[in-house]
Image 1 (cartoon, rainbow, N blue to C red):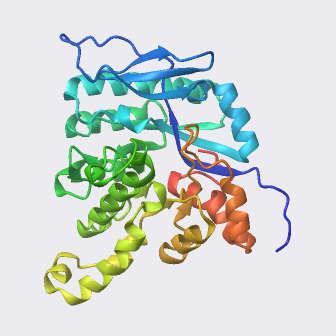
Image 2 (cartoon, helix red, strand yellow):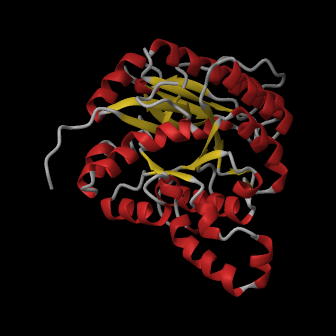
Image 3 (cartoon, one colour):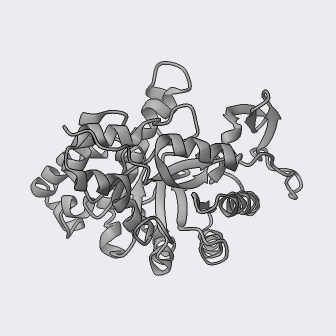
Length: 343
């Protein structure tokens, strides 16, 4: 394999922010799950939710200059930042969640404005209330200039492919806003043996896999053909579920009747990040969904992030055009950017 000059034009569609501080809620009484920050050293703070430490995060979550220096080391030209998923707060009362997400979205917009074009934003919306979610979607795209929104893989146990979320996806489709689906409060934690970090390691891929499956079995892309939607963590378990769904669609008449468009055709209308930590798994993802559907996603700046996404792509694929699709071109299409990563 030829040795190429290291690419510095990557577009990362999966990265997160946490504000440096949270205000007190204006709601009385204050919601029990309203977050706060506690000092955790010179360059870190601990996010506390419902009175319990949730995660200690570094100042890369809010320090734009430090973040850009990291992007330079990773070869990332543009990074799309979205709220730490636990801050999406779909379990909170809708008015309080709306307050919190508007605050986070405004802080994200400030970071984007200070980044000199190196950061772009995905907003958070209170999807437990469709009217509020649509209003905030309109605001972050129309007023803040965000490229789209991040949503959870489920809304209090309801799959995102459920028909009740159709008005939200219809508005995203109308606006041309990208939708990024991140694993959130996954099912199956009671089946895991080990420390709480297994939520990120094992349960996240399970939940996002079910979310992607619900998009296909719910005919999301049939109902919204111009929607651009991507799934985190390589789509999780969806790549293993899809062959079973393809066969089941042939065998069971009920599945054939429910899905007028075959599962593989629908799946190849979705986008996926390549956050799988492994070259052969990344290659399988590309073989299954197409080399026009997979993009860089790092989960930066949390500890469990992909530190060498471009190196992995270049080590896995020999074809320069295929490499560039995964490194930048597919993300430009997903985000509706001009070539070179410009809005």
